[in-house]
Length: 319
Image (cartoon, rainbow, N blue to C red):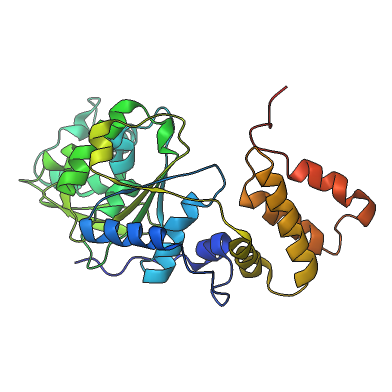
């Protein structure tokens, strides 16, 4: 059984701020949906406006439950299921075999790819060096506690990806064909994982989870997801943070103090957000960083700068 997952305190601190400053408790509906996803072993689809903190939910759960480094799979229109599970560097292996053949004086091209006896064992021994588990594949490594997997911007994916994921979510396992083919000669192959400098020994080319990962799937609502996929997931619509939650986020990132000016800026930010359009909490973070910086703007240019910093996201890039 693999040991505990690696920690990544620096990344969690970067996203959530200092652990010494406690964030305001999550809304009851958010905590309920997280607990339900954990108990039911179901992925949690998190929707909401861009920049509202959907991705941060995965890091908050990881820190609260001590589940280690968050595995992140960022989706594009070209993403496939195999991208999330593993990658096999076939070209690199051919090049390595050719170099080994040249070292041993092989004359026939590709001879090192068809060795027998001791040379066959040597070739298979290096197979795992060319297999890299992806974020999803690493999340399915059997451990005593679940891993946290963030599948970000899922609505950018092709429809086939949602359908392909259903089998993996239902079974909690997958096979690596390149390793399954050699399982009779080499049942155990050590491969690289998505965690830095970490490896895992795959038995018979198959990986099956012990504790189903806590999967957070973020969506900006740009594309509807297939009903069959939605039926096998839970959905949480994240509300925009209120003044108290924004104040707690700023305190975690920048410390307490200067409460009057900070509160005024939060009120101004919320009034602009309520006026229409989309503003992200990151935009407020940027403003606070500049406001408290010794090299920040003077008072005369502050309002002009805020107009640019707090430009509505639905206006960015528009004519």
